[in-house]
Length: 173
Image (cartoon, rainbow, N blue to C red; front, side):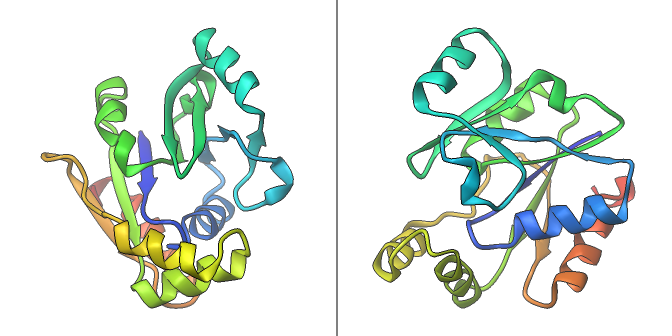
């Protein structure tokens, strides 16, 4: 079973995914390829430059790929194999993901706007003005017909991880 975890930046997707994978050893977190330096942290990802990403895309290496916030993201075919796989996706790419991955389950991680702003500011990647603009234009909508389970991450990381683990149960989705 493959689960796409989506939600706005700052919702805590990476924190909850790391906690879920630590708590559930059979769960595989698909590693993304991203056009940003690996040392920028967050999730475990492979950082590449735009030219490398374009070459790999042209070679057909990615099962899924998308662009968001000025960056390119891709997930290699092999990353999506296994009994239970989760990946940090994009709401804009869910339609294509549903076509390519039959049976895909979608989990949307959310948090109140104030919490999102605080978390984004703590990252130090954007100015307060850029964060406010990002939150003002954010849409949490998914394509019509997508069955989604919402997980609100507005408490401690342990509570958020427990909520995500509950959403990863087949009966919930």
